[in-house]
Length: 260
Image (cartoon, rainbow, N blue to C red; front, side):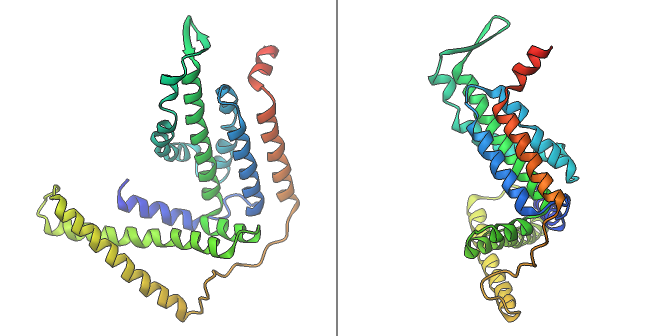
């Protein structure tokens, strides 16, 4: 991903907030329960995890982000998740399934389950961020009891990522303008650019911090007053908790197989 597209993505996320007209605290609660349900599915039952895709698909479409965009971004975590379970097929050779005469070992089944868990978890988090925006999430976490210092740190890290990307983009344009079309540079020059990027980012962050202090910043970000809970908020919470419970404790694949 280029620096320009990364900045556009961050700006798009900051401009969101209100894609789904539901209190963010209830959305975070549903997400937490959903993640517990996904992680509690036995590794030997990846078929149940397939049904768990209902939540990120519905949420991403409801907030207007589109499931295709969320699914593509979730693929970035696939190499890391695959690295966690890469040795399962090599260590566990016990037979688990037989498909068209081909025996599938339990190691491959657990490997697929680990990959599905990682993708589902990231897709659910991305759907929440696209729906409410990161600022609303940090504000809701403060209201739910998260220490103010931690919530502020999360928000500051998110804010200063754009500062780092803007400085990197500025240095990249300057390098391209003075490179006469050259794209390959020695390692020593890249090390110098990384050091300069760090110094430029720290200097700009200090200027931003002084400006915040001049405007009354006292270590915490101001939070708007909490809105009154509506009937739709409770319906959202109860509905998704019920759907998550059904997806976790009911074997829908076997149920549909018996019906058909």
